[in-house]
Image 1 (cartoon, rainbow, N blue to C red):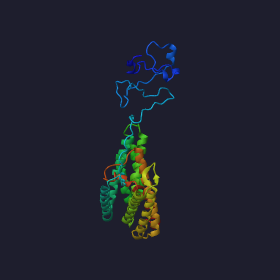
Image 2 (image 1 turned 30 degrees about the horizontal axis):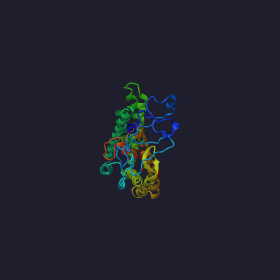
Image 3 (image 1 turned 180 degrees about the vertical axis):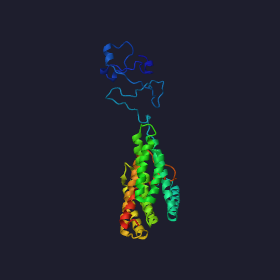
Image 4 (image 1 turned 90 degrees about the vertical axis):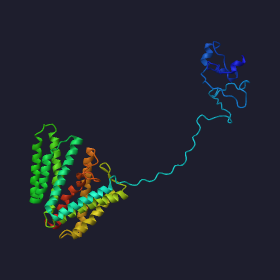
Length: 374
C-alpha cells in the first residue's frame, strides 16, 4: 500500500468486516470484497480532513481523521484544546427592564361621554320643569330614534325587517297618549300600533312575515310602551319631581356600578352576557341607589319617607342592571358593541335607554304604592 492511500478516505465509504475490529484499518475498495464481507459492512459517514495541531500536513501525520465513532460502542472525542463546538451557546441577553403596568381603561372617550351626558341632562331637566309638553316631545323623539336604531341593526345583522313607519308613528302616539289619557290611552295606542304592524307588513311578500311582525311587536313593547310609564309619572301633581327621582336613581345606579366595578371589580357577574360587569359593581349600584333613593324620597316626593327610598333604590338597582344585561344579550346576539353612534362616548340612543326603559314601570308602580297617584 503506497502513501497516497492516506491522503483521503476510501471512496466506497465502508469499513472492513466487523469481526476484524479496528486493527485491520480501512478495507480495500473495489472488487476485493466478496459477497459475504459486503453483507457485514455498514456505511460510514463522510468525514472532513482536520490537520493535527502543530504538525505539517505533508509529513503523513496530518492524515484524515474520523469525526465519528468506529463502532456503536465507541465514542471518539477530539482533543479539548482544539475542538470547536458546532452550536455554541448563545450569550445571555442583557436584563430587560420590567414592562410598565398598564392603566385600566374605560374603553370609551370619557371626556366626550361626560360632555354629552351633561348636555342631555340640561335639556331634559330644563324641559321637565319649564314646560311638561316639551319634555313629552323629548321622550317621543328619543323613542323614535331608538326604534330606528333597533330596526336598522335587526335588518343589518339578522335580515329581519320590522316595519319602522308604524312603529315610529305608533310609538310617538303611545308616549303622548300616556300623558294625555293615562294608562288607558297608552294601552289603546299599543293595541293600534300592533295592528298597524301586522297590516303594514302585508304589503310585502310573505317570506319572513312571521319573524318581521314578531320583531316589530317586540320593538313596540320594548321601547315606546315602557317609555309611556315616564309620561304616566309626569301626570301627577309632583310629576316633574317623580320623573327627576326616576332619572337620578337610574343614573346614580349606573354610575355606582361603573365606579366601584372599574376600581374594585374582580368577580364577574354574568361573563357570558356582559364580561365587563362584576359583582362588586352590582354592590356599588345598590349602595349608591339606596342612598340616593332615601334622599330623593325624603326631600323630593310629597309624602315620601327615607325608608321607602331604600326599597326604591334597591328595586332601581335591580331593574337597571337587568335592563343593561337584557340589551347586552340583544347586542351579543346581533354581534355588535353599540346600537348606534349618535352620542359620542355613549354609542346610540338605545345604549342610554337600556337601563331606563325597564326601570320606568318599576318606579311608577312603587311611587303609586308609596304615595298614590298624586
